[in-house]
Image (cartoon, rainbow, N blue to C red; front, side, top):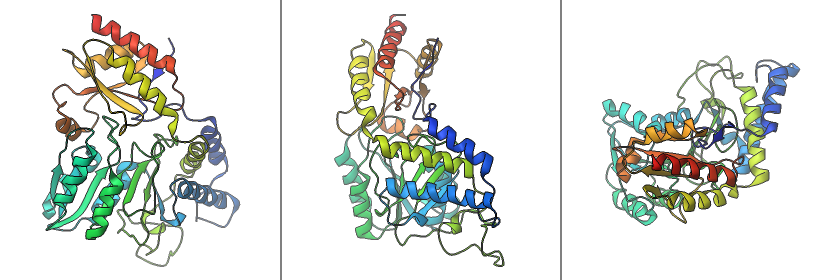
Amino acid sequence: MPLIYLDNAATTLHKPPEVWAAMQKALATCGGAGRGGHEPAQKAADALFSCREEAANLFHMSGSERVVLTHNATHALNMAIKGLTRRGMTVLISGYEHNAVVRPLKSLEYKGVRTVTLATPLFDTEAVVQKFAEALKGDVGLCVCTHMSNVFGFVLPVERIAALCKQKGIPMIVDASQSAGLVPIDGDLYPYWCMPGHKSLYGPQGTGLLLVPPGGMLPPLTEGGTGGDSRSHIMPDYLPDRLEAGTHNAPGAAGLAAGIRFVRRNGYDYADPLLKKAVEKVSEIKGVRVYSHPVCQKALFSFTVEGKDSETVATALSDRGIAVRGGLHCSPLAHTTAGTAALGTVRAAFSYKNRERDIDALTRALQGIVSL
């Protein structure tokens, strides 16, 4: 039985062939970037430069040196959160944040950092903006907001929130883990953008990006060799070197560059018709509740089956050759906000490889599970 893969919000399983080819070539030819004047070192440096340039072009950035290569989105978020928080600060977050935001902030409570969650109804963008506008006062020193919920596909109005933060002079971090490659992003906009390479940018696991805004800077999360300024005992004061200690993942960067080129060539909208059809078909099944919105939702959706635990449903679908994810999706806060924390939800997410026949198979399998 061929596997129907609908867990692309966790990681895209099917990478474009050019991603594999780029990584294989890098593995065979790349040395350590900045660790010598020989050809393998230069090829590694070229791979890193190409990745930054591709990202800067996709995200409309005026300078590729502000593209910082990270291990994943969690790494980028920790760099930004721990670099921008100060003792006694209040941090505002949306009600749809992933544990990659919630846990770093929780770890900073010993410094008196206080987190305020702005819970709002699901798919209500105006309520999100209003909540942030009302709360941006007093000792608020940072805002963190996901761009697109990894549970519901809810696209939050981060550009409007960023404008409010800019007016107040308050830094902002955007978790673009789900949106990067699916929703247009302006890397010259006010926030720090954090994203993985292995989801809708179609790069390999172990890659990620931190987009630093113009004029922005962070203290390093880790210190070490950078390939330059070797006489100095402190990290450089310029990007990207300041935030990139240690040997780079040159094969990963080469693969990510190829994935970004694929996105630039093929556009963002491939998942829209799939999402629309999936919501329509699954909503017709009696006993299934679908969480959806016709405007502010992208590429993924969640559903529940009446009387059944979501992880049990996901397992039953797996037994039928369909890979989805059930449970809390590392985002218990989002489920609490939306009222789905008791049993979680089942999530289906699409990539460029999915077709309408995959939705038909999901619908038939769900009908069989419900009938049991």
